[in-house]
Length: 350
Image 1 (spheres, rainbow, N blue to C red):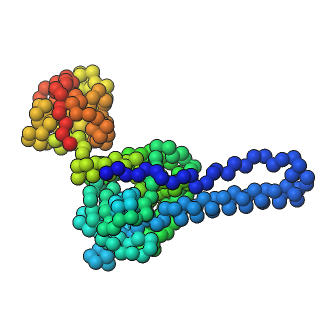
Image 2 (tube, rainbow, N blue to C red):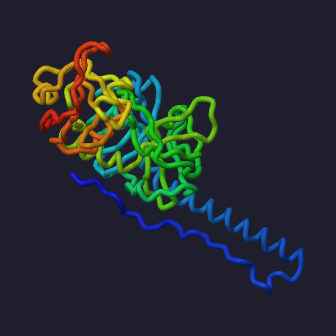
Image 3 (cartoon, helix red, strand yellow):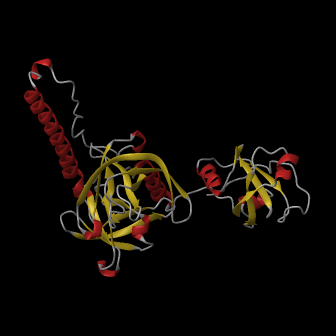
């Protein structure tokens, strides 16, 4: 099934103000009136842009009740196709099979969890209805710091609540529920409250560019959203495979510091590594000869400083990368260290 990624024309043109013409600068009072008029026009253009985006997108925003019979906590979501597919946060879905969804018109519909990916805090749902309004997906790679953004959702259960802000920063990282880093997080200044989770973050053209996911308690103007390009990839994985496929080594590991003597003796380029604590029997690492006590110093020629580096490289790699471990006993100073050596091609499973 293909998901629409467009469908709406641009809703407004950016207001560009140039220098005031000389004929309009006859005196201080006239100049002041011109400045006030320009400010008024800018504010009016801003308001009209937000209004038009809200009118276009808000029908696709839904409230989600996550308790039994819809009596528990609440979250937000939004529809991405006319036949009822939508997105929300994984922590809103909460490992439940079904949710109760409330549309902008007040209709109450059952929502089935199609797939869940705690690693990106995203979940794909489907409402039991057709011919529904939906929000077009944009391109989060094109965002720029300072760009206008509009957040929609149901904070504290108040349906169809809207707030505005700007892109404060890009390429942030957050840790998901499974401990993995979520990359390319959007930081924005649109006020968010409990219940906004899972709602859309929309640009000035009415295109979804992110899925609101988190706030920092007691902080103001610090909201975070998973980029829509990540959501697009997750949707494809969930629809095609029922889960998000990720490369898997089959090891339990922990960050480790390399002794100075080992670094010098083996001519290593880094003082950090990943120490293998346990190896899954029959897994890719076991078949490649990796054993507990080995130190993985590089993947595909890239040095490792911690578990997050390993996750990043596995997430962006193809099967068959080479692992270069340095073996030693579990206790420093006991046994003989070996030079870094490739352990052969590791067939990574997903």
